[in-house]
Image 1 (cartoon, rainbow, N blue to C red):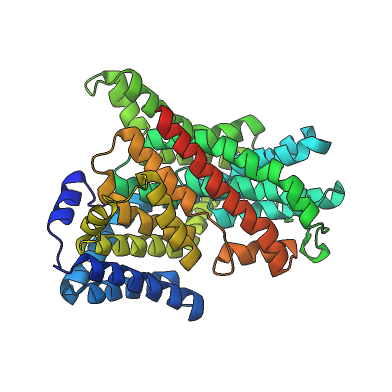
Image 2 (spheres, rainbow, N blue to C red):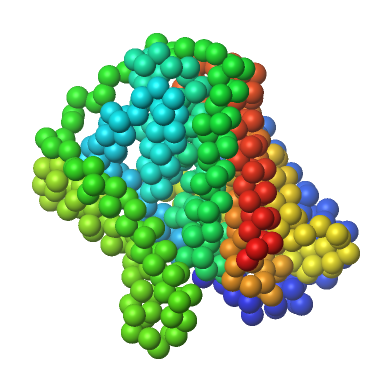
Length: 465
């Protein structure tokens, strides 16, 4: 964990490092977030640096000693990286093995060969959701967009009819389903059970992706009817592996960590005895690190060796997978530092004091906070990390299910209305050859639908669980 146990939260809530009043703390939080927003959106500073400077500014505005602010930031950064850094690295390795071995192409080609006509948007949702499980959002876009463009071109489909379902699948996985960095950090910060969160996340994700993907794509295709841009359609890489992994083995490898984590959650509920040998085994096998490590080791055989890779080639693939995640680790770590600074200056106590008189449910409050930060910074990951830090004290007395739903409420809020401050907005715009207005009417509306529908299903689950 990242130092956010119940005991730590209680200490933070009762003994902040500054005696500033709620008004000053509220102004300090707004000022700290404003600094981050200004640095990211106006000065184009890297998010890692912006979060670092914003954390220091938060401490200064709150009246905390600079030395203690630095200590809070570095402690939060180190604990966050220690808690999720290994998981992010293992996910990157698995994603790289999937891409380089041709396993991703095998999944795509197999499903597309069996999908025709009206079934194609649904096939794209399936492809994006499966591929999106182990991959970061940006990697998933780079991997899938060429396929989307080719399918739209060769099948004479509307680009939005094919593209929106694929983007929805990737985005929902990114915001709601671990082992993506955002959900993992929120789980870590709120001390939520990963298996329960994963299970409930899948329950929320399935209907959400259907509504925001194939169903919404019908309207998106009417609003923006454009062909696939010719200059973005390129042939597949010439350096294909000698053999592709089989479809069944590829899907098995991708779903293995998810299955292990879900098995752990199921055994914990059914057996509920820490001394039971079966539960002890599943507790180890279903822990995030062991589940992902197992998938990586299995993938080296089912993906790497099946594609004809030598041991040296597999080693090279692993090595190349780690370099691109350095920036992600720094951003996530700095977000953890900002979160810990929020807690240590007493913001948790402030939220408890202020929100006790509100008629706003905790889940809705968490969603609104994430929405505000998402709109301000444009980053779903920053929104998730920051919102988790702000509402962490509220999770201390919640049930296991309640805490998991709190994570999903934050994840839903973090996806709200992607616009010009979001790197994903520009990535989609350029790949699809759209104008800013067209991107707002399709991609941005899709993200908002995911956010609102996701919250709706989270609130429904809170009524029955």
